[in-house]
Length: 142
Image (tube, rainbow, N blue to C red; front, side, top):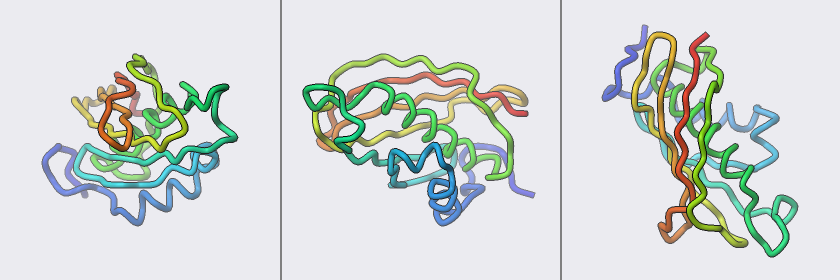
């Protein structure tokens, strides 16, 4: 049985997370790529796609929100495994700067792993490190 405390080695492997990303239909649309993972943490890259841009080449806000949600989902798996059932109950997004025709990184971190609720944050940034969005996320363990 894998331990659920933060600070231990991840409860999933990089290969398992890559497979989950490739098999999740809702995530495939965005072509998310796994950059890194750790215990309670995950980072994805979201490549720019013209088919998902807003007028003027802006990366659509919904892409940031989806990226934050998916990245947190994977970060949670690093603590409780890939078979645990969790669902988003709250996602609050603050848009800080636009991204224009560029790839975006999204990093998520679990702040508190409770028995029924999981709290975390995610941030999306440009490739040069400019902070674009900040997200607070709550998940429910089922």
